[in-house]
Length: 399
Image 1 (cartoon, rainbow, N blue to C red):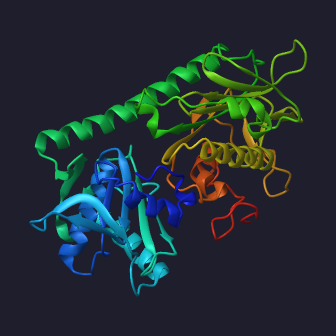
Image 2 (tube, one colour):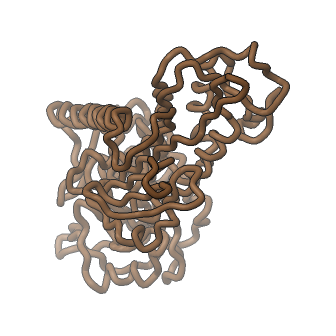
């Protein structure tokens, strides 16, 4: 893999691969030409891409000529970086992306393609495939149904035992995420979290990168300690921060009173945000003020995802939203559309809303959270969140 942030790769980085004789291997592969539109070319390309995703991730660089030995066999070493002559980079990027999206299942989250200009014959195209925690990924083009991974010698087809092991690892991941959430919810409900909270209803947001399965993942959180404004607690106007055993904590607390809210950033990259100040009582009714709750959650999630990206945490991530202490509460907003008599009370104390899988940081947070908001409203007997318009965007009442 090119040891550079993907968006920062330059012509100099490509030329350095040749100058430093950086060999192909488990995380890097050179191609002189782009794959054609024939079936065999597409199958070979998809095998290459899926092999990186099912292993440790890596880069494919198109437009680099590989050295040959005296018998005209490839040496795995780059000879020159000429670029790709006569191509329309934008068109080719879209074509390659379409092949990947339609030819591999499940879809590989976070796969990116970009063009590097300035080479002798034309641009170089680089595809960065992250190590995937959503696999194993299978090439499905033309009903191929093949699984590939990589070694230092390049890609290889997995046998039955290796495929079984890959699926077992995927199951372990789901179990680990579920176990983490269960453990954290039990601690929060028992008020055994990093700060003491009031005995009031709680909104709990978890962001869990799928790298949770890798115990070696340990982030440097010092930059957040220097700028804690990047991780404000939900609906907080002021907050403190400190390191703890789990990572970095920001919390909104007045003197020796219980804290209103906090954000725990774990060294593994997990975010846990808890707020106790989003429910209200009005005219004797227990109410969830939907506009404020939804807008504050989206505002906070947007900020946390920016930090996730800044810390170098790759997609996919699982977003989990839970409400606790809400039995008897009703959905409410400042409108004559619903009166209290028409609203139904939530029939259980804890609402674990549907999980959301984020595989692209460009996805707007209102779209990400729609299924969770719909489930919240449905738990109170309503057809779904009424703050989304016909285009599926939050902000306009669907009356």
